[in-house]
Length: 130
Image (cartoon, rainbow, N blue to C red; front, side, top):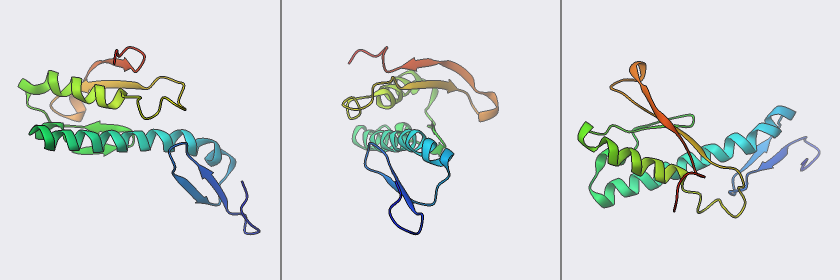
């Protein structure tokens, strides 16, 4: 919506983030989708970091966030537990279920380096029994 004679618009996300500034049509359409996804990843990062500290499992703490990717470095002996914890946190819809009516999808990959990742699977919030 236009908020003045300057042509500055505001675009709001369902999770209380707003963008003020001149925007083209594509930006207005894209911001709520990409912004909400970005905010969800940030909140998942914060929950994983808190869990890493509280449980004494430093490998749960994300080391890289690139776009909508979260990367952790887990020892091989803790991979299964770390992957399950990360998926549960990323697919947790509890704070979004009052307004989000589409499933959250997560793709998981593992490997010693980005260039040699192998796909573990695709997971949906619809498949998780809470």
